[in-house]
Length: 85
Image 1 (cartoon, helix red, strand yellow):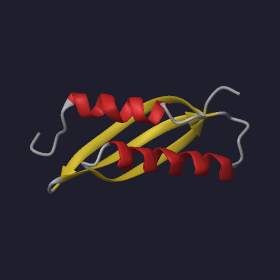
Image 2 (tube, one colour; image 1 turned 30 degrees about the horizontal axis):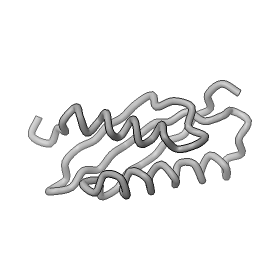
Image 3 (spheres, one colour; image 1 turned 60 degrees about the vertical axis):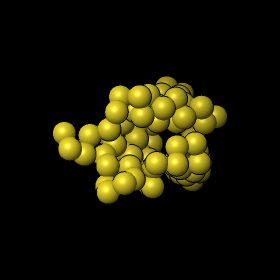
Image 4 (cartoon, helix red, strand yellow; image 1 turned 90 degrees about the vertical axis):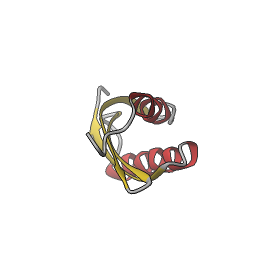
């Protein structure tokens, strides 16, 4: 548990991710301290009819918003998968 993060940070990661237009759901969040910063891994659902390029743009938007809204986050890996269309 030395690198575990507080539940409140996970809640903020979920809320920030869901606030991105086009994100349908957040199904998994992993976050860990790496030194004095946090790296997050987030799995989000997007409309199943989006192209790969469109889903990638949404993933980049989630990463950007996480880093802007939560300065403790140094990086994020965002995985998209198709949700309901």
